[in-house]
Image (cartoon, rainbow, N blue to C red; front, side):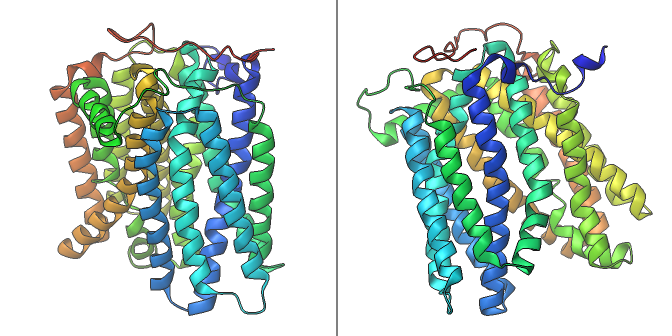
Length: 429
């Protein structure tokens, strides 16, 4: 296999001007998102001195995000997706600007931070499904995996650079500058997305009750082995084998380190994820996509099991990096298969379920990991148990859903077509 077939495939960036605009927007937006999330946590702690208040602020954001995702999924399948993205991003820019102004006041108000978290979460949720559904309309069908890898790469870059940059800015000029920088990023993103073509879904404008629309999406999910399998197999990873809540205890008690050791544990999966995204060129070319996905999730479970059994910090970091690599490959393939097997008229609703699971699943998994650790009296043991249960779940899903094993990105999915890239505006150079 040549090097060009391994490194991340940039064909969507070369072929589609509109995808380049979307990619650039996501790249800077992920950086801004981490600037604001870290700055908000720091500000709440400075105002209250309470980690509980920080957690409540995050909970407020998460709950409003979930509500927004459910509503946004229905909305994205009824009206122009470009308009949804622009309106919700403009609304979020206003909210973030308010946070910057509040932080710059001599006496910042805590209540405003909570209100802003609810408003920003709701707006992001409303726009998330439309933004996710936009990518399949801007690239050729054979480029879905490559497009997903590139979008994943932006997330990993933001995750690695954003928190550190936010910490430096907060320690210097202050959190107000973090919020102001994110507000500017949102405005720049609006300018980049404005030239996109109209992205009306199939059947847009047809009257349908929201509950009926949601029911249609759920019926499609139950009747499609591939899409149902994509969600189920992810549950095996994020609910049963999510070790992040265990890192503070493992870093200090099991490995005998301090905050720097805990930081290394959190960093290792991100490094593996970044490497996985960089070496993702093969994901769009492999024929047995479903089997590769099953293998990637199994790699996560196996790596988490070995992480729990690791006798030294460095072996633990290696296995966490391998887990991160498997997680990224899984995300790339799941996103591509989801978009490939979902009709355009359902992209918003099905995408909202995927995003909702991605939002809530890790939180549930971290709580589960903490409870298991308490029951066993060992965080390392909880990681091992989680990894083994994950592997068992992956095997069960793979055996129960042969459609997932046979899923492929090569050619159109059986019985369903896909919308062609948008042609209302020149999408290619």
